[in-house]
Image (cartoon, rainbow, N blue to C red; front, side, top):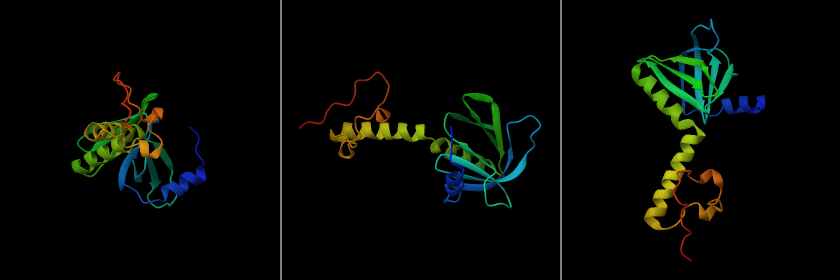
Length: 156
């Protein structure tokens, strides 16, 4: 995926959902753990040298797996490159669990699944499709692929 570097730098300066100095080891053999300022902004994980304002890099948190490595560490690996794993070391077990939870919830796919769940629940309770008023109720990205029939059209 291609990104505009200026837009990424601009995004990295936005308020973050979570930020902390963590130990970070990159995916290359021989990489060592280094202290990095790590910021979660929307579905990007930016990492900075602790004394610099521009990010060293960014991870798009889509199609990835977040795993707890031990009480104080977690890793991120991308599904298409499972052998390339980024390791993050936290100060406490609670901090580690909070980061894992936040990263999982930051993905587009997580938000999409939640939207579909709540859309279905609202439709079940009210008989109305809450997305219809925005003209997007028929868009494929908001459909659930479970083999179930699509939501019925609201009564007219």
